[in-house]
Each structure stands twice: as C-alpha cells, then as structure tokens.
Image (tube, helix red, strand yellow):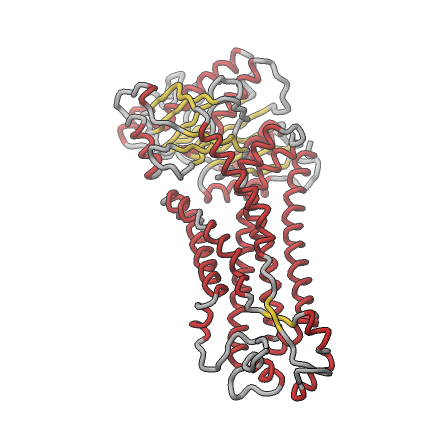
Length: 567
C-alpha cells in the first residue's frame, strides 16, 4: 500500500540528491582543472585560487540557469504528459510535483552568483595590486606584458592609477555582471510569499526580468577578461622551465615572450536548449490562446466569489488540477492560476474566483459586480485558458483514507474532488479510497453559501446509496457577530444546521488538531492516510507537525503523508 508513496518520495529525494551531486561534481572538477591546467599557470600567479573559485562557480551558475528554464516550460511538459501514454500513474504525478524544483534551482543560482561575484572582486584587486610599485617578481613581469609592441596582455588593469570599479563598468563583463546581479535580486525579492500575496501583478511583471537576465548571461563572457596562454605559445614557451627565468624572456627561443588570449564564452551553450524549449512553449501558449473558450454560465455569489463555467475543445482534466486564465481586456501579459472546481465527468469546466487583488477585482467588475444584473453571455469579455496543470491533490484517490483540509477560499480544489467522488459512487466505480475526512475552516458565514449546495447534494446522495460513512465532514466557523450568535442559538435544536443547511452541525472556533489526528489514528490503526491541505502557511506547518507526531514508528502502523496545495 506504501509502494506508490515510496516511489514518489524516492524520486523526489533522488532528484534533489542528483542536483546537489552534479553541482558538487561540476564545482570540484572545474576548481581543480583551473588549479592544475598549465595554460592558466601564469594567470594563477596573479590571481591565486580566486581564479578557480570564479570559474567553478560560473560553471555551476550556467548549469543551474539551464535547469531553471525547464520548469518554466511546464505548458509544453503538460501537453506532452496529456498526450503521451508513457507518463501515467506515479510518474505523471511526480512530474507535476517536480515543477517545484524551480525554487531550489533559483537558490542555487543565487549562491553560485554570489560566489562568482566575490571571486571576481578579489581578482580585480589582485590585478590592481600587481600593477603597484610594491609588486615585484613574476607577478609584476606578467602585468607589464602588453606594454611593448607585439605583446598580448594578461592583466586587464593597464596602470596602477586605474579605478577598478570604473574599469569594470566600462567592460562587457562588468556591465552585464551588474545587470545580472540587479535582475537576480529583483526576481528573488519579488518572488517572496509576502510580495505575491500583496501584489501578484508586481511579482508577475518583475519575474519576467529573467529575459534580460538570460540575454546578459549570454554576453557576459564576450569580454574575455580571464585570459590564459595560447596553445601556440605553450609549444614555444615551456612554462615549467621559463617561469623561473622570466628575466631572460626574449622574443625567440628558448623562452619567447608568452602570448595570451581570452577564454571562449560558453554560457550560451548551456542555455541554448532550454531557451529553444521555452520558445516552443511560448508558441504553444500562443496557439492555445487562439483557441475559443466559450463561457456558458456566470454566477455572482454573495460571498464575493465569481463562478465561471466554460467549454473548450479537447479539454481533459483530473480532480485537483488548475488552469491559467488571461483576460486580454484587462492585461495581455498576465496569466493567473485558478483551481478547477468542476469534475472530469461534467461537460464543462469551472472556476471560483475571489477578489484578492487588482486583477481579480477588475475581472469581477468586467463580468458584473455583485448585486448587478448578469450580462448577456455574448457581451462578456474574452478569456484565454491554458492548462490544466497537476497538483499534489491528484493523489487523493491513491490512499485508502484521505484527509482534506481547507481554509477559506482554499476549499476550491476540494470542490472538484468531492464532485468526482459523487460521480464515481454513482457509476459504481471501484476505488481504493474508502474514507474521506473533510475539514473546512472559514471566517465568514456567507462563504459557505456556494459550497453548501454541493455538500448537501453529496450528503443526500451518500445517504441514499447507503454510504453515509464514506464522507465525514467538519465545518468550522471562526468569525461571527452578536446577532448571528443569537440566531444560531435560537435554531440550534433544528434538524439541519442554520448556517449550511446540512445535517452535520457547524463547529464554532478552531479545531483541536491533536484530538482530530488522535481519533483518525485510532480509527485506522494500520492504514496509509493522505493529508491534503490548501490554506495559509502557519496552519500548514502545524498540520505537517501533526502528521509527523501521529505517524507510527512501526512500518505496519498508521502513517500520515502530508501534501500541500500551492501555486
């Protein structure tokens, strides 16, 4: 029963370990190559180990820049996954999960970029020092090369009075390096969860600075500041012998003046493939953008949630997946993710959109604000849809027991799941899933309005089918005023709940997760229980801690496996 989970987790661990291993191998291999390579012996005389640090971190930076574009091309991967029969089962779900690898690779770029920048600053200072009056011996002799005719230079700092900062900003490497650093800082800072929640539009636009980042990366090495001895010079100038006889260097044998040239830039070779893949993905998105999306129904719920029903050609989905939506009349560049709330068995797909920013507010106004009369469908603005894309929630049916926990609008992924359960039970489809615990924590009583109808229908259907035990749902209301409290108290003895209209009464306050997990562990002593959550980070950390706390040390005991829904 644990085979699927072990496979998925093993693939994730292998992926991360492989990434770390390749980074470590590239760094060490490049570091020692530059420490031992004979053509860079004279360069090391001036720069020391800072040369190896700069070059090793540059190779790792190029490697991670190659990887960072692969998750961005998720639309192409999604298309391949949806049309190919080779990506099924756990491999298909694992491919969706590994798109989160994007963030880990970004940290790799930041770390290697910082090492590369510090190493080059040390290189500039060493170059500058070797031109000073205090410099003597071989470093001074090497730095003076290029002053006479027919000599190539090794030290790009030509005089001691040169300002290193000014000099660096007048070179291709210096300008592109500055642009790369600023672009990376802007992308990383705007990608924080706080920025995404406060202003998703700011995150969206600043994230596309990566185009400038990759253009600068491709040209960064064109200046060829790091120079090594040419192969022709190595044949005539024996470094091992001649470095100790630098005072006798002549233009003829046995020790002619060494000649130097810059190393050929290689960053573009690393990113060429992923850039082509990304370009194909953009063309595919353009093609999908042209496909007609028919809006069949628009519902404005009192809770400030906009419900849209749509149809699109060749649209196939699974419970828990999400789509990207663009509204050209609002912005031709912005695509926003929304979880699908319809079931695969329905002849349409739907989303529920809550106002949570400028874009969603403009969209709700475009489709008619709450309380206004609905617009005619033909007069509604055009929408473009891309996807669907997978999420961890697609694993719900692969556990014998699943626990679905939602906070606020985070309930939307579970709407599709509960509808799919309904259709599967109606068609007598065999499922591994035998028990579902559903928890919904919400602050506003109005927010239950659109979801209560689904729960009521599911509750009635399960009772008619004799499967009332299959779904156990617990709804918690965390916010109410005095008038609502009086109304609730007066109708407490009624057969149905006053807030939701369900037979199951609404709980007031927050759940005691220790008690809830203890009861589930007691009820299923030897089961694999999948816990799926969509909501704030603080609650996510608590649930993850509960999963670890109540999982048995016995392999045959109960085990909770945590899965978090996030975009």
